[in-house]
Amino acid sequence: VAVSDNGAVIFNKEDHSGPNHAVKLGVFVDEAISYIDSRNIPLEAVAVSCGPGSYTGLRIGVSMAKGLCYGRGAKLIAVPTLELLAVLLGEHPAEEDALIVPMLDARRMEVYAQVFDRALREVRPIQADIVDAETYKEYLDRGAVYFFGNGAAKCMEVINHPNAHLVKDIEPLAKNMAPLAEKRFVEGKFEDVAYFVPFYLKDFVAKMPKKLI
Image 1: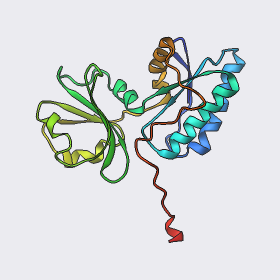
Image 2 (image 1 turned 90 degrees about the vertical axis):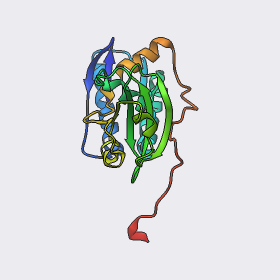
Image 3 (image 1 turned 45 degrees about the vertical axis):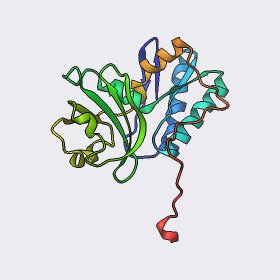
Image 4 (image 1 turned 30 degrees about the horizontal axis):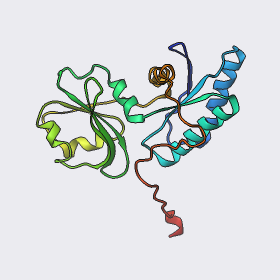
């Protein structure tokens, strides 16, 4: 959870201990609201990472964002998670014609992935990819491709191509959403608070706990 004001991040809280949105998010949001209220900073908009990603995590995040918007009369801004990752890569690829592929872990050898060029123009839309040696071959045969995000490392062995490069330690953090969120704010790109839903990409699949089988 982070707060930005005029392009600068003025409050930030992170937890990297695991998927515990339900435990930590409310606490972090309370601290963020207390911070801005104590300094008389108005809450103009709430930006939320809108997916794809964890079904439960997205539900919790979007529900919290909607609650804040209703309670404070703020605008709702949605930031696609893979676009956020792509922006964070910055100018890392040295090759002008390189492609960049942000990946979010799904399960087993499946990832949510999107393909961009260096100017962040979409080359291929978001898909749920079951990764094997052929999945990105058409792009790899053309030149350098940079893979990153929490789904990338598990795929590198099976991709196994000389043009495939892994970039580590790029995470979709709230503090890095500020430029994308503020750009959308200036452009007036707001969501309908009542009807907005996260981009799940795939339907939720419920599983029975092993202890009940």
